[in-house]
Image (cartoon, rainbow, N blue to C red; front, side, top):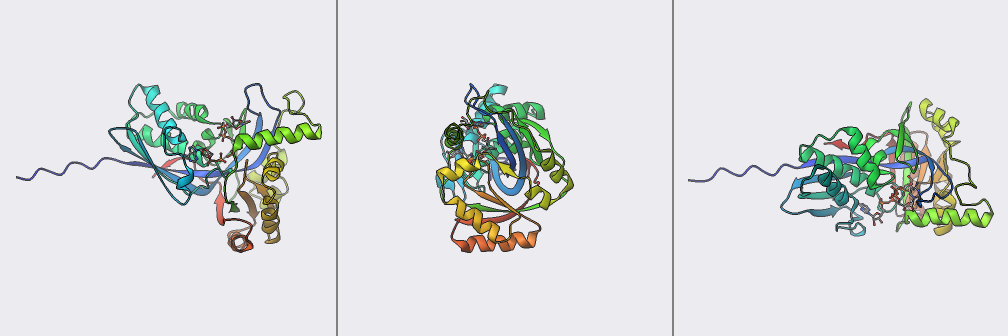
Length: 313
Ligand SMILES: C[C@@](CO)(OP(=O)(O)O)[C@H](O)COP(=O)(O)OP(=O)(O)OC[C@H]1O[C@@H](n2ccc(N)nc2=O)[C@H](O)[C@@H]1O
Ligand SMILES: Nc1ncnc2c1ncn2[C@@H]1O[C@H](COP(=O)(O)OP(=O)(O)O)[C@@H](O)[C@H]1O
């Protein structure tokens, strides 16, 4: 007599967005090695998917065009997220995590943070833990400064080192093109270069020399109003000069995007991805095409924001 088929192992899949920093104002270096920020995050429609399946021992696999650039050992931020959650609940992190990556790696779009946020939510649901949202956000902050925002999505002001979030209202859809570079930039290297440039310019790098960064009222009003022209006039990234100093060729990418009709172009976070704001979806598609053929980037991706945060699919 044949045995009934074993029930298939359950898999929980979570989709998590990339981000762009529409304002990134960086204060002086703190004693703990971080910088105080006024970090206005906007989640955008490029996503990684994190799938969690029960396993005998912890396992991690990665797919997508940049998979070879992602660490597939214990150091992966998603694997660390699963271990942290399991440890807090006194259980084994016996799970197979699969990351289907579409967010550029080391691109200033918080791909690793997205995977960490996705792994936390996927494991929480797989293990039936139902950890309260506030506790999950606190675990996110332990994993990295950007991880709480990857979890929350939408738009938010990040203060402290970026992990203290205040949700922001957004009154419309903003259209973007992201010019993806060949090769990444290391976030700590870019912050260090920012400090070095400030020292060299005589503007200081110690906490006492530089005023506490604050969110721009004009920029917050532009977000609330859903007004791309007003947002274009106010976007700002204090790390841009440092990213350009480490990767001078990005200046050509920024010029190419502006010549193709973008309202504004800026480096996304620590770079090297460049973000271009467009008035509508049609002009985003045209600008993406022009950037792709300009030879100044590896790929150009049109998309829009705000996008939802970590979501079980
Ligand atoms: C620059 C930003 C802008 O959103 O993102 P990316 O462009 O890397 O995606 C973030 O501040 C990156 O956040 P995240 O990548 O989570 O950084 P963490 O893991 O917390 O820190 C990595 C390192 O970055 C530097 N760091 C990070 C955050 C901060 N407020 N000040 C810092 O100086 C520190 O050197 C730290 O050791
Ligand atoms: N799940 C992950 N996905 C991508 N990178 C990861 C991951 N886990 C750890 N990393 C490491 O984090 C570094 C930063 O990657 P990422 O988060 O994509 O970029 P950024 O910090 O510029 O937004 C990578 O170079 C990689 O070594």
